[in-house]
Image 1 (cartoon, rainbow, N blue to C red):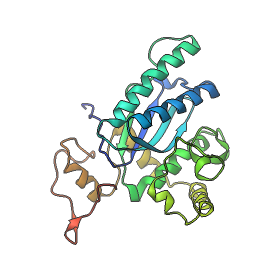
Image 2: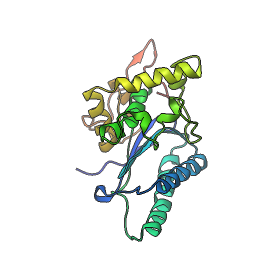
Image 3: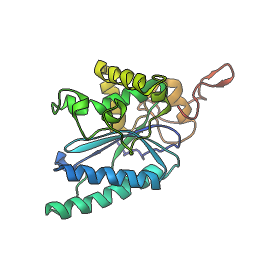
Length: 241
């Protein structure tokens, strides 16, 4: 099957995964992680990207971002990837490729999957057996959202602000959301959609996206489908979902 082109649509959240070549480590020390976070902060500002959540694992990392422009996300990932490879190779006496090909990404439906995707990202170190709880892992945005530290890299999404009327209420609600975990279906959906590039959301959401591009949005859609479903004369999906 031909490889689908990556799709970036401004105003929509994107789940991004970048892996090390042959699953080899891309972070070998705290200094490596700090350098990556600094690169992400610098280039997110430069290319107008809001980073809502992240986790740096030993051999891969996840981001949940909303780009303001069509080219911002690929430009950011290219700039970060090239600079980090030079840094890592120079610092660790190696040469050659570091990444397992191009990064993977997909668009997700905001109201249905954004908070679940944040929890999915936070729980990566727990699923890997690296920590017992998400709050015990230092290289993720989880600490910011539960009040353990302030992280200037993070731009909370509007849905996070809706979790409570005070910082304490939001932090407690989000901590409980992550503690409750995800269903097996959510885990599968979030992983497979990012790896294969299929848009993640309800059929109306996917149809709405499909009306704006020739690129297939789901495994089942071979071409441009009928017009997206409408509710009360208005599109069922808003531009920011």
